[in-house]
Each structure stands twice: as structure tokens, then as C-alpha cells.
Length: 250
Image (cartoon, rainbow, N blue to C red):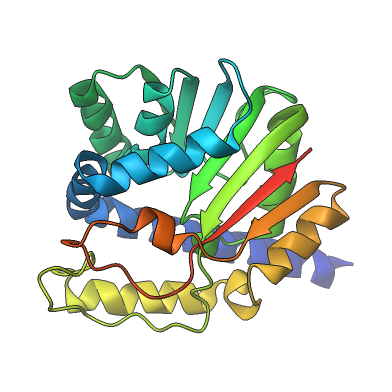
């Protein structure tokens, strides 16, 4: 019994340490990442994303939670569409960028610091939960999906935009038009090391996600690659890994 308790404690401590590494990584990336998202917002990508969101969201004014909001990209687009938006991120520096970006865009968004796997919201709080390029970074995606289902209202919608980066090693980009150009080699190495520690990297996606969400009783629709719809700015070179969209209804 004591051995089992100790193993659980060790696993918990390892996850906390991993979360701290992830938070520190995104804190350091926050400035460059924010500039990238602002360029997307200001160009054809922003308009394309706005159209995709408008197509997928239910009608009416919605209570929306943007988990892993980063620099506030989706949160700003959703606020511009007339919804009441809350953005959550574990990185304090990212939230600083998000608040500045929303203010500059003239948007009202409530931003708060929090853990995507343990949300500080009551059950059945939101009509819609959105997230972009987050799940590949989480220590426990199953826990996150359960938590996201919990905070959605009955009939609520989860939109997850992400890619299967588990088998795709990141390399330093030198081409100026690449969206990841300028990232220090040390940070690229650190990102690969973190990614290799995550259980989600061992699963093939989005098939794994679809199966798990259905096991929770959610109705799931999938678009395996929407990259051609949203990566439309010729001055920005995005990676070639398919960008999937999962729409799961509680």
C-alpha cells in the first residue's frame, strides 16, 4: 500500500514539474508568439478563422471559454463575433500579451490564469469551449477532456483545433517567412524534450481524440485538415502537419 501511495506521489510530482517547464517555455515564447498571432489577426488568416468559427458556432450570443488562449487570438475573434468570452492560460506572460492585444483590438475579454486540466469554473458554465494548438502540449489530455465536458452546458460544443505533432520533431527554421523563424535553437530543443515526455505524443491523432471523446458520451464530428481554409496568407509559411478540427457536443 505504501509503495502504491509513493508511486502516486512521484507521478504527481513529475506532472507538476512538467507543467512548470511548459509554463516557463511559453512565458519565454510569449513576445514572439504574440507578434505572430497579431500578424494572423491583421491579415487574411484572421478573416478566414473568423469565417470558420462563424460556420461552426450555434446561433445567438454565446458564453465561450477559450482554453490555452495564448496571445488571445481566438478570444479576440470570438469577441468580434459578438460573444461573451473568457480566456484561460497557464502562462502569465501570455496572458499579459493577450490583455494588451484585446485592448488594442477594442474587444472585451475576461482573461484569467488557470490550468487547462483543472478549471476554476462551475459545472455547466459555457455554451462553447474552444482551443487551438493546446492539447498536444498537455500532460494529461484525458483529464482535460473530462474537465472541458464538465464545464460545458448540456448540448454545449467543444471545438478543438490541433495537429498530431507526436512524431514530428521540431527543427530550427531560418526561412524569414516561416511562422517559427527566429526561435532560439535551445528553445527548439527544449520543446522537443517536453513533447517527448507527454503521453499524448504516443497516440495517433485525431483518431485517438475522437474515440476518447465518444467514450465520454459526446457526439463527435471531425475535419481532418482545415489548414487550406485558414492558412491563407502567402507571406506566412505554416508547417505541413494537418490541422484537424474536432467538434464534440455534450
